[in-house]
Every structure is written in C-alpha cells, then in structure tokens.
Length: 444
Ligand SMILES: NC(=O)c1ccc[n+]([C@@H]2O[C@H](COP(=O)([O-])OP(=O)(O)OC[C@H]3O[C@@H](n4cnc5c(N)ncnc54)[C@H](O)[C@@H]3O)[C@@H](O)[C@H]2O)c1
Ligand SMILES: O=c1ccn([C@@H]2O[C@H](COP(=O)(O)OP(=O)(O)O[C@H]3O[C@H](CO)[C@@H](O)[C@H](O)[C@H]3O)[C@@H](O)[C@H]2O)c(=O)[nH]1
Image (cartoon, rainbow, N blue to C red; front, side, top):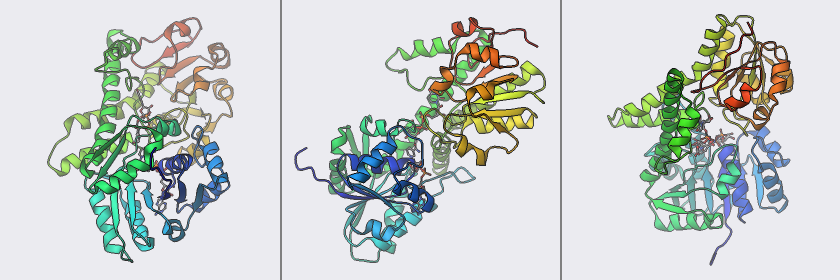
C-alpha cells in the first residue's frame, strides 16, 4: 500500500450502513467520527454498544473506540470540522407513492454546507435515484457558508444485513462514481486496505448499478418463487430444481432459495423506486412490476395454505417462529412476518411469536393482541400449528422430536424450507413448505 495514509472521515447517519462503514473504516486505520441525530442511539454507541444486532460489529466498535479511531456525536458542527471526507449514510425510505423520500439526504447536505471549513469530498453511501447526486452537490453549493470546494462521489453500498462486517471486508466490488477523477482516486485509496476490486465509473452509472443490482436479485427470487408455485402443482421439488439450475455457472446458485418472498429495508423500496424512475422517463418496467406483484402474493401463500388445511383459523393457537426479515439481523423492515401476522390476527387466530433477536424491535409494530414466547419451546407448547418465517439456525436445529411432543397438533407451515423432507418423514409431523410436496398426517 505505497503512499497510503489514514484520513479524517466523518459519517452522517449511523444506521446499518453508517455504523458498519464507520467501524470498518476505523479498523483499516482511518479516524472516524460518526454523527447521528438520534440522541439515544448516540448515547448507546458512546457507551460501546451497537444499537443493531450484527455479527462482530460491537467488538469492532469497542476495539476502535479504545484505540481512539472511532467516536460518536450528535454535534454535526464539531463532527465535520476536521473531516477530509464526509460520508452520507442517512436513510432513503419509500414515500407512500413508491418514490424515494430524500428528506434526510437534503438535511445532511445542508448540515455539511453549513459546517465545513475546508475543502472536502462528500461520499454518498445512501441508495440514491439517478440524478440525486447532482442535486446533492447543488444543495451543498447553494448553502455553503465558506469559500471551500466540495466534490461529490457516489459509492453505493452492497452489504447484506447479518453479514455486514464480513461483506465490507470481502465484497465483490466497490463502485465509485465520480465527476472528478482526483476525488475518485482519493476514495479508491481510502478503501485500498479492504483489498476489494474497484470499479470506477460516472455518477449516473453508479446510481443505476445499485438499483439494477437489487432489482436483478429480487427478480431471481420472484422467478424461483413462481417456479416453486408451479412445482407444488405438478408434484416437483423446487429445492432439487433450483440446485440443478444453479449448477449452470451462467445461472449461479445464489438467490434461488424459494420461500415466502423477499423483505428488508432494500429490495421492496428499491424495486419500487426503480419502477418509478423508469416511469419518469416513460418506460413501463413491466418485468419489475411483475417481480413486485409476485413477491406480494408470495407473502400471503402460507396463510392461504393454513386456511385451506384448517377451514377456519379462528381460535387456533399459532406459533410464529422467526420475525426478522432474514436471519442474523433484528431488522423488522418489510419482514414477511408483518403481513403473515396481520392476516392471522384478521382470521382471529391466537398468535404466539418467537424470534431469537428481533422481539424488541417487533413489539412496537406488531398487533398488540399477539403474545411472545421467551423460547422456541414456549412458543410451540400446545400450538395447533407453527409458521416458520425466518431460517435462524436455532430454528433449523430445533429437534423435530420436540416439535412433535410439544405441539397440540404438530403441523408446520415452513416459509423457508428449513427441513429436508426425509427428515420430516421420520416424525409424526404434518409439513407444508414452499414448492415441495406436502407431507400429510391425520391429526384432526
Ligand atoms: N440496510 C442495508 O443493508 C443497506 C445496504 C445498502 C444500502 N443501504 C442504503 O443505505 C442508506 C442507509 O440505510 P440504513 O439501513 O443504514 O438506514 P437506517 O435507517 O438504519 O439509518 C439511518 C440513520 O440516519 C440517521 N439520520 C437521519 N437523518 C439524519 C441527520 N439529519 N443527521 C444525522 N443522522 C441522521 C438516523 O437517525 C439513522 O440512525 C439507505 O439509503 C439504504 O437504502 C442500506
Ligand atoms: O435466495 C434468496 C435470497 C434472499 N431471499 C430474501 O431476500 C431478502 C433480502 O435478502 P438479502 O439480500 O440477503 O439481504 P439484504 O440485507 O436485504 O441485502 C440486499 O439489500 C442490500 C440493500 O440494498 C444490498 O446492499 C445487498 O447487496 C442485497 O443483497 C430477505 O428477505 C431474504 O429472506 C430469498 O427469499 N431467497
């Protein structure tokens, strides 16, 4: 790493992306100040605790805080004063009409303009619709208080929740979109110790790469879910089908796991934003609209199966196993469990939910009428049926003999295909999964 130097970096927005980026940039040697408006969150981080459940993150924070390379503040003035580079990692959620809410980005741009005292590069990590970076640059320019130069570079983030720290050190690529080659080279240099391949391009392309990547991954998932729905009707097994497909390197085995559809803070909002972006230039993105429709339908299939099985779900005690939108995170944004539980409550089922890490984040957004189990055992005890919604290891490893003995009637609706059919057949368990033949028993 000839000529490599640590820089003073500030990050505005310390959520999943900002905090992980901050901790990882500190780990490779930079001096990082994280700025967030959420006082409670900042207080927690100052005490060395991560506000999110993310493997390895808290240890990385503590190590770099002790080495005085990582700090947290709510004070943007002090936070930006010495920065060579400022990363914007605030949220860009979905507006009710499906477009992107850029309020937090606008505020971040204004704060930067107010407080910078020297030339600085602003790196946008937030996912931003095409054209937004030019607008960010203009917002900063219009509000600048001092005679300084601000370059804007787009560096979209590709980490996955649950493996965010690992992904930062082992990413497939770092995309750098910039007008200024000099600024792009500085951002490349910052990231050099990660030893991840860098692709440099212009800002529009970088913005589009992020949306196109998420849309493509979402398309793979909806595609395999449609194949799964057909498999169910013809008696085929989607697990075998996707494995056989994935052996073809042109197809690849990733993102071919059938289930109850994709959730999370990115795929739903980013697919919707891309449909709107296309609409804005009079392109009807029919394929992506179908991907979204298929996904919405997929989240409902498990409840439909249960209704078919029981006739009525009223008064049935139903255990929900897994609430987070995917394992190894406590993130509940757009989790399939929200849709499934809402339907079950409408059907007047008595719901008892368990998740190893997401219960605290789930409670404020789930219906008040549902109960929570302190363990898998507690949730399963006396249940008439159980829905598996997140493939946590704890759930996959739970002994099926205990499922059999704890439940009132051991009927599983597995939205994540956690078990091999042969394993289930060794037990007196009725099993309905996605895209695979059901295993029926006679309990009722
Ligand atoms: N979560 C992911 O896995 C992921 C991955 C890739 C890209 N992204 C993108 O990265 C961006 C951030 O996503 P996230 O999931 O980390 O969001 P998040 O909601 O977890 O965090 C955003 C943070 O920004 C803070 N914030 C908002 N306004 C602020 C302001 N004016 N000043 C300081 N702090 C402010 C909030 O308090 C919050 O802590 C989004 O654009 C998202 O699409 C997310
Ligand atoms: O074969 C699969 C793979 C995933 N999923 C579901 O898809 C969703 C998203 O999963 P994943 O992509 O692993 O998690 P995210 O953390 O949402 O990461 C995605 O969204 C991020 C935010 O933009 C990007 O940075 C990542 O590259 C992109 O993978 C989850 O509900 C999964 O259960 C499936 O149903 N089948």
